[in-house]
Amino acid sequence: MKTKAVRIHGKMDLRLEEIDLPELGPDDVRIKVISDSICMGTYKAAVEGPEHKRVPDDVAEHPTIVGHEFCGVIDAVGENWKDKYKVGQGFTIQPAHFYKGSLMSPGYSYQYCGGDAQYGLVPIETLITDNLLPYNSDTFFYGSLSEPMSCIIGTYHAMYHTKPGCYEHDMGIVEGGKLALLASVGPMGLGAIDYALHCDRRPGLIVVTDIDDERLARAESIYTVEHAKSLGIELHYVNTAKPGNDTAYLRSLTGGTGYDDVICFAPVKPVVEQAGDILGFDGCLNFFAGPTNNQFKAEFNWYNVHYLYTHVVGTSGGNTSDMKEAIEMMTSGKINPAAMITHIGGLNAVVDTTLNLPGIKGGKKLIYTQIELPLTPIVDFAKLGETDPMFAKLAEITERNNGLWSAEAEKYLLAEMAK
Image (cartoon, rainbow, N blue to C red):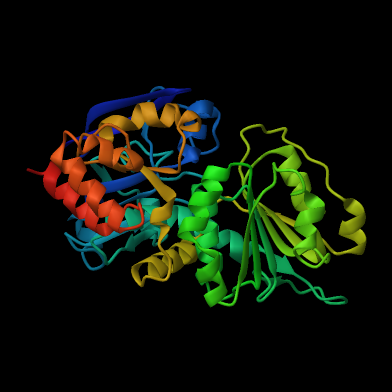
């Protein structure tokens, strides 16, 4: 069968094309993709092309489908998998399955599987490793966001602490401890705030920093200081570009002892160095942000490594368990990662959006692959609604949801576009 798909052919060479999927075989599961959220990782793959660790060397001759944050329904099942998967069943995919140590991943490495397509064939590696995950919800964008949320959840699980004289690592952030989230009001940072507030290992203090008042104000309007207080958490939003909001001030919010856990969301040398400087005894720094510069370096206080037991970790992606936790927390209403989304669009918007992603303000760009729609900021719905009844209704729905995308908005959009 034919499908439309966005494929990578080389460096900064993405193309929306119609391709032929192979006939369904006994070891195949065919999927219908409904939504995919565009990740900065896809932009990095476009920049690096075949030099990217997950993009095949021969991508020019055998282009692969991009997009790895996707969700949809199972369209057909080969004979060997009929006991496990059913037609019409919802799915999402954990792309980082590391089968036999390989970095091959849906959305980077496969000719017939990626999120920026209407249909695809699930790789056998995904099936063998049990990373085609059941998704029992009709809110597809949550399924797409389960992958980035799994990365955030994995970050929290990767933090560790020790006790003097003990060599065992106590995994996770310090319960009731002091947490700093630096440069944390982008889409992934917002998800990190949501998770810290609502996970089962909550800190007692959360300090969120950035240098943009508008983005900080939006974050505070969604995750309010009052809501945090009702959970027993002291929450601060700090613009570190303003006079007086320096490293000394950040440490003062802890009573001068420093932070147990710090997560850095920007590959910026001063931010990384500040992250290290605010750590307390046995503090753990997680460098979440993935730099494109493979020579990126920053200074770190090695005196504190020796005498204060400070630690550094880095995480790149979550695992299947993290993704299952994300799905459970979203579908049960414990977290609402809709705050990450600021734009919606159709499959026709993927190429330009991905190639220009760093220059497009806002958070996650959510793509509905079965429709055509220009990339559209949610904040523009009301203005567009002056001449377009569909956007007028979407504006009304999002206004009722604190300006956020929602299950109601998704269902309305897909129904309207199907007419």
